[in-house]
Length: 115
Length: 236
Image (cartoon, rainbow over all chains, first blue to last red):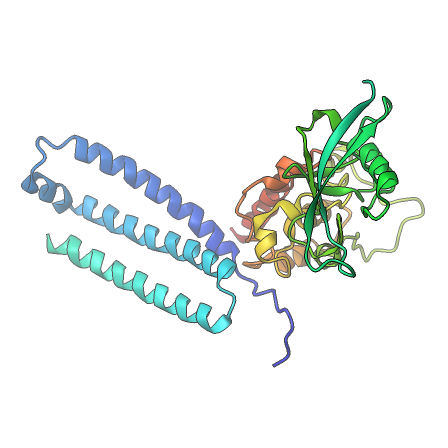
């Protein structure tokens, strides 16, 4: 293979924009979550469980996790791009990270809808 | 200001003689008329003529004497020598290969600059006198065209340190926006396509070292933000 610097993958804008949008979603959720948690009559397991039992809370929490995982994907990939130079190792790390994040999303759904 | 002695700590490296770089402690007596760091360097050169650095216009226009001054990039000809805590530590611009002492190899920097096609692209036949712009359109180019390509910004940017071969860097991106913003240019779309890349543009994480060091007080971060704005307007 010729050792030439190749650059120009023609993507990046969507990821950059996605990272900003998911940041807004996470910020909104943080406020929403804090208000709900502070409004609980008592800090008990039942009250906590009841808070996450509501349909909208469940939906918004899951949305928060999806936003978090997408946000983390772009951020972690940026770190790999800066610091991991061998292409094979970087690709392997990308794949592992992607599977982990997709797995976490499934796990989050399982926990939320088990309540 | 009268005569005074100034202490220096200077990065020295001559690849023909030295096995590795070292820091040289040296002092020099300045005349009352010596105001800028470059004046002091010229005096130092008289004392030790093996010291190498670039300089040309000595008034902040050519961008030759960019160096790392007490840990911050700047132009020796614009820096007041008396404003600097002593010993004044001078190093070559970080992140670029050292040719000798304070002289760096700028090839990579200019390669990135050339990659954004820093010239007007307009396929219409030139009018008899000149291509006109409204004063408002011309206004947008202020703060962009003044760049002297001294490389203070790009060599202070961590993203450029990690990927100098792939990230265009603040200086190149400022120049890119200068042509993207120019109403006389017809290649806006191609220029945006050229930068739509995880490395070329999106390595910028708004660290803003570039804004901190620019000796011409330009704002590459703002220009990069405007490029992203234009990509957004194009996409949605």
